[in-house]
Length: 359
Image (cartoon, rainbow, N blue to C red):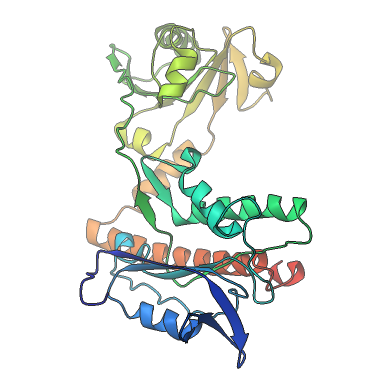
């Protein structure tokens, strides 16, 4: 394999058969020999493929160890180490046998893994992640264990890779949302984002003010924008389009700023809220007398931090090279911390550490 694989490949190794513990180590039992599982993992690790996944569907297969991941360098891009390394997914823990399926000519683990591969619900943007495969197989086996207490199997998942692996399973065509732009003498509708739910058709609108306006004038502008957006047909996916096409919006939030940097940074001086009579207006129109109030039937929420955040952004703006270096260092530290937490959580879900130690 090493002679035909390059660094961009993903290597999948799948073993379904007999496994046994002896000499305090797990071994894969073949018809004419046996192989140390830890030695096999070490050999596969040396294969030049960026990502390796080992599936072990055999008895006592959770009895293996992995090495700690290599920390990314500061000057590495996230894409360079995303998915780099290996993961091992075993059908049972170190003390459990791995059962055959009572109704199929395959094992329980392989059966649930096949069901997972065919489940369309875990396909996101045409891809399936190893993380979601692991999660769904765990759910299937958890249900199985509850229904079959004498045939318990607790799969073990360990990895030394950063992040996860994505497998392309379908062509992905992004849903083309409607672009809404409008400019008047007083304001610019910069962006309209559909944030619909199953129960409400909702829009978030970003607006650049071209001149200072009083609250009374903002109220008038808000009503004008609301009337334009109520009939808008913008959606993020086909399901949402089918649900809400041709219907009026139930809720419209309008966020005001003074320039494009406010729009990109999400720093707004205030926002207004409108909802129809079917919504809980006591909730959406709550007031506190200081930052939340109503003027001419328009509910305002003043963002008291606007000026300080704008000053903070201006005072902490550097050149591109300095910014990239700082972001990479912060990202590296965050990713390292996140990986440590995920690794600890996996140990907890694998049943290798207690809840008290995890906490």
